Length: 219
Image (tube, rainbow, N blue to C red; front, side):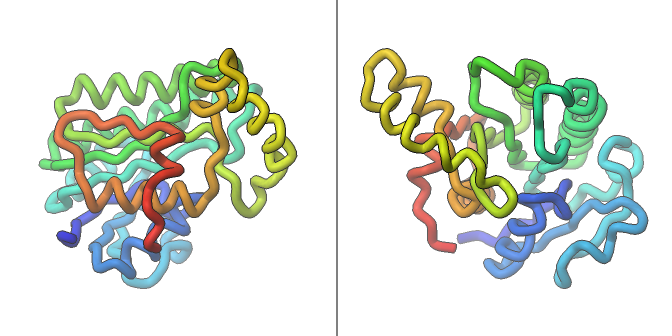
């Protein structure tokens, strides 16, 4: 395993706050973007870059010499009523990050998108799909992870849906959708992110829910 030099956005969020210490413990170097006043929320061992994730010019010059970019900025607790926030935060941040990575010599970009197509959360899906399109147009090598819902602390209510998922996966008419929109655990998602960082893609690699579940968890 080759240690990576990672530029990370969203390091203080739900997944980022858990991913960062994992990557550090595995010998990777992390340069984490943080807003002024939020620097103390990042774990010891990070090199902190002060800037705004929505403003490319506030951090683009500090992306080099990183070789890997991990984009985790997003609205907390996504819901159907948050379409305006998705466009103002998720979309603006991925535009800034892809542009900064493209001029900053990044060799591999890791992006958390969302399972698609899906019958709900149309605004969220549209924003994440546009993020994917930006990556494809950029020419960057990228891994795109497509979870639907991540189970973990504070995110447990969908456990009640597990029996329904089992039934849908057994029935041919609903099997494919049930697998594509299946639930993944926070540990599975973290393992998939670590795997993406440590095994960079050539071109564009899309990792769907079934593949996220299969990633060998050695964390």
